[in-house]
Length: 227
Image (cartoon, rainbow, N blue to C red):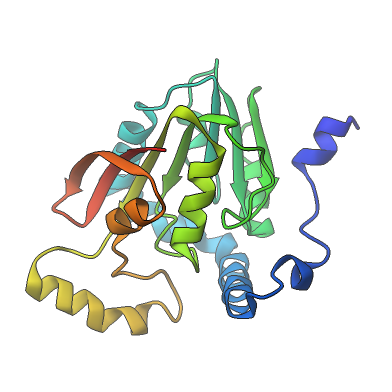
């Protein structure tokens, strides 16, 4: 096996306590979220199928249509539902911190130009300014420290690169927003946060929001940002 192949299937950080030194709360929450996705990986696509059929497949195609390369990073690739939509001339690195989700992604038909890595968006091992485009799909509802992860995206983007975020967010309507705030402590015990202000978090990470397209009311958005 080549060195390049070994990197694709690299083991997780062997010393997570050192990696997260001084940030024990984030480390604990990250471990809990990773374990939740590992446990649910086997049924993830089955549970998501109705929503994919109704709208998400269409939204994914819209997202990937905005991608430009040649170097692309997808964070939180999950079971790999976006991978079939990338143009064949792109070099795509796709990361997820859940090894069992990545196992599901590797079972999909593979094409050249795509590499899967076990990696946490909150602490990526890529060099500064590596990618032309960074993509996420419903990821920052679950990242324990979303601003930290978004700062990492800003770091690995090239100066003229773009971040493309397909994310569900807290609705702007006062009543619906309050309802999502009330639901969040219940839902987030076993699933994602439903009241994340992701557009604000993108800006807080130092990214400049160039576009904000509502795909489902103002709850599901396509956000375009630059470093």
